Length: 61
Image (tube, rainbow, N blue to C red; front, side, top):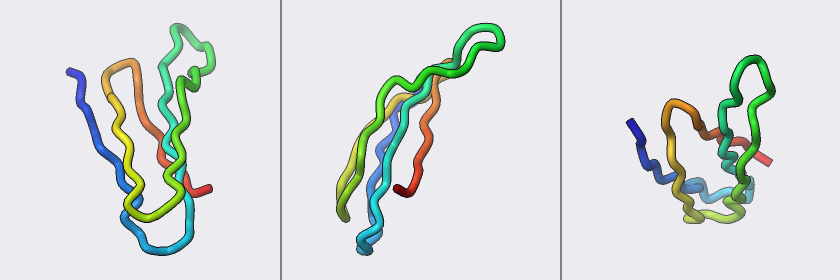
């Protein structure tokens, strides 16, 4: 099942976030980074898709 998720930098500090979209690779190959979206300011928002072969990682920059 595919899920669309919305991620917001809801903190009012100056800490920046990045949302990475990763694709699962077949066999024992490394996973593939599809895209990276910065959330550099409060209220910055992005959307991503999550399903069996894809996942999101949220990191503080």
